[in-house]
Amino acid sequence: MNTELFRLENNRISIDVNPIGAELYSIKTKPDGQEWLWQGDKRYFAQRSPILFPVIGLLKDGVYTFNGEQYDMPLHGFAHHMEFAVSDLRPDAVTFTIRDDAATQEVYPFAFQLDVTYRIHGASVDTHFAGSNESAHTMHFSIGGHPAFNVPFAAGDCYDDNVIEFAQKERLERRLFENRLFTGERRLILDNSRTLELSHDLFFTDKAVVLDDVKSDVLWIKSRKSPRSIRFEFPGFPYLGLWSTPGQHAPFLCIEPWYGIGADRNDKPAIELKEGIEALSSGDTFRCAYRVFLNA
Image (cartoon, rainbow, N blue to C red; front, side, top):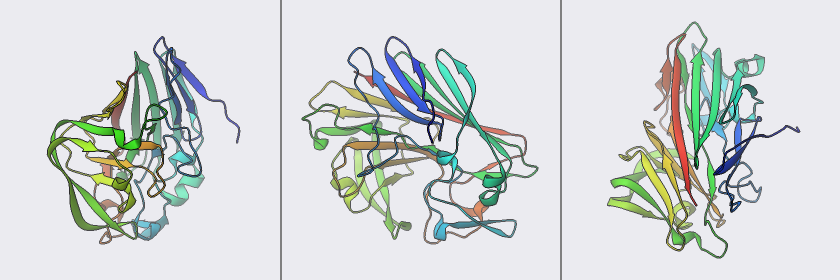
């Protein structure tokens, strides 16, 4: 499907957004023309910054139940496959909107509106989510971001030249997987430190690094060889994912703030019982946002 990308720009940066999935497609700084966002490559990861709604990750057996009915749900939900309409366009911001339809009702029996707004200010990009429950009953959902950034920042640098630095000292344990489901086991990856060393080995065995105990709401991707860095702000998000394609030395890093989490092997099928699921009353709107600041 051919769609027109929407561009926002100021004297510091430009961004492009694809209405399919309301997916951020490019973030460039001026005047150097540096592309900070991963540009998609089927060998590693074809997408760039998909929006995860109304689930995060996989459900156990790919299904859930609600009010006694069973529904199938694909990986990360369906929003990233849908075409959004532009509902508001300003010099510094654009809002994309989807609503439930016959196709979504087949897999998700809730009436909803989802707005995704991108706003630029200086060298920063804000991503705002607003999900409204238009059903007569409580709506259960998860929502999150999946932006992938080009790492390393400069040609000739190595992935291992980069680190993730948290705003506070952290003691972090990653959740462990088996057959793409959490096992309930954890492994310590950071102990009273702000700095997590980046390497492809971080993703080789256990794939995604999934964290639920991060005290910081700000982190940086920093290079030891370049002054370039990315500041990533994710206030209020209870879960954080870090990911790159395992075993392929892929030149990108995803920073994923989530309201919600993937499936545990002991999960029950009822969606309202799933860990991390949000419950939104009829007529209410859920809002959250994260910010990317580029230091070129």
